[in-house]
Amino acid sequence: MKPKLVRVEYWDCGSADHRHKTEDAALDCIAKRGKRTPPNTGARKWTNEACAAVLAEHRAGARQCDLAKSLGLSPERVRRVLAKAEQLDYAVASTDPLDRLSVRTRNCLLSQNLRTVDQVRTALADGRLDDVPNLGKVSKTEVRQWLDGLPSNDEGIR
Image 1 (spheres, helix red, strand yellow):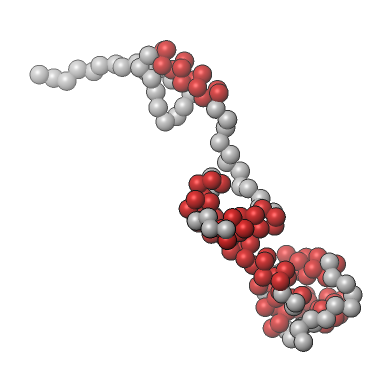
Image 2 (image 1 turned 120 degrees about the horizontal axis):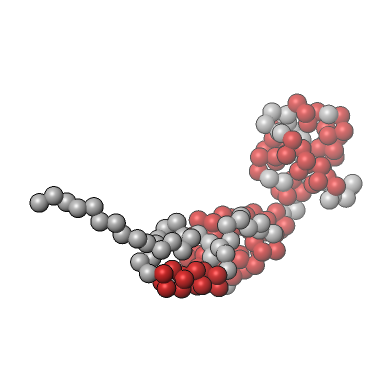
């Protein structure tokens, strides 16, 4: 006995992952999909306030996996948000103004023995920050924004 070619027709509902045997099932699927909201595929921008709110929930006793489910995020993403919130919380509580900078920028400044706000201001005005290794355009922009947010008589590390 030889195998026979049997043609099976399916109804396409527009979804790439499945097909339907009947036209009614395909129409029902199209109607259901039309009622759904499209999934959010874009990256969410986390503000400092949102990170602080997640940290407050976590400190109140919520587990990371529960936070992930309620926010619709992966547990790894929740860990990153909590780490960012902890860093922001530490920077606000610290008396050292250099703690408000990112770790990379702060380490680059300290490697050049720039330990006070006035030293950093002078180095920026003189153009010495252009010669600092690993201090790129983004870090320089961060330093400028940081200096704009500080009073002019602010002292750095004691």
